[in-house]
Image 1 (cartoon, rainbow, N blue to C red):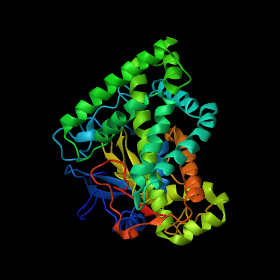
Image 2 (cartoon, one colour):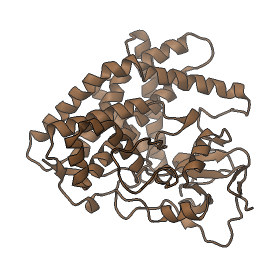
Image 3 (cartoon, helix red, strand yellow):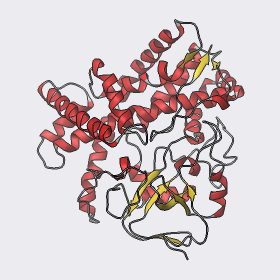
Length: 414
């Protein structure tokens, strides 16, 4: 049995890995899944840490309470080369002071439950037709000018931003600023630490003001609903948690979906038979969306978790203080779970991919994201059946220096 630091004589590979193209997986994944449950890699910060690539191991990480989000502990791995450890090495307000006691975690669980209710049900039902209308408007604007056009800037970026801002009652004139703050906060190498700190401070101050405005004039929106819960004064949640949750919803609520719209469309257009299959049977849209979420090889930086106690994976013991990276996109191509994992099968069912997480750590906004992806795909198929890539798929440029993987642009014509 090996330990967290006893990985034999092999020299750890440098992480992150990069695929040959923006749509293809890194060559290392298949070999790593076959060879060992734990792979040792060297981060940009120069530290060695553990990387998980198998489905069952990544799924276990999501369900195991010993894997924490607190990456600011003194003994945690430095994941980038900045002086203070960068984006990942900052305190997580949701983890500070959390002990092993179930009672300490129950507040976090209740908070997630409240957020989940606020982002589903009636509110999502009411937004669905408006999302379709907004998608139509954006496509109208794009097609009003001769092609080719960039689908990322024309549709993939503005639609999810508009959706989450509508849900949180963010004024239209503030949405571009929200986008700028989000991009800075998700930077790995594009922005300095001081720029990120400035963006975080400004974003937090903005959210506090927005909460105060919704408290003075509440409406039928997520922030008004959450503010009412905070104002109930039962001690479960406070203003700082609400502001942090609002920022988290705004950043995660548009960034990942925005990038996924671009990647999903590129994957479907890269092989024209996939697009034709959907044109022939639009009923496949729900399973096609799930398959795109599974097949996506460009997630960005792996999910990091701090280990609060020893854990064993297939004969390798990871010790307390180890920072473990979960390569979700690699796990989603594990052939022990997904037959023909490197083939995009628009009819794949069941499809238990881990893109939205698993168990108690499953994404609270997953139904919002699914709805947007389905709506966009249905609208594109209906409005632009002749849509095609304006450049070869292998020439698409991967977005670099940002936590969430995506495409710099998606040139298309119709």
